[in-house]
Length: 59
Image (cartoon, rainbow, N blue to C red):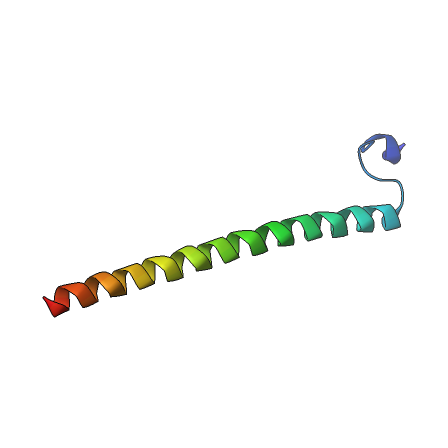
């Protein structure tokens, strides 16, 4: 009777583990992409600021 309470739950632990691993893979890939974008924009803005500061200091 308890199994009928959670029908959306996968039947076997192996299936549940597989779904969890797939979800982890998706989220980690997304996280890696967001991190690389953030790192790129940070370094880009940093180099722009250095260029601007250098130009101001020269004049």
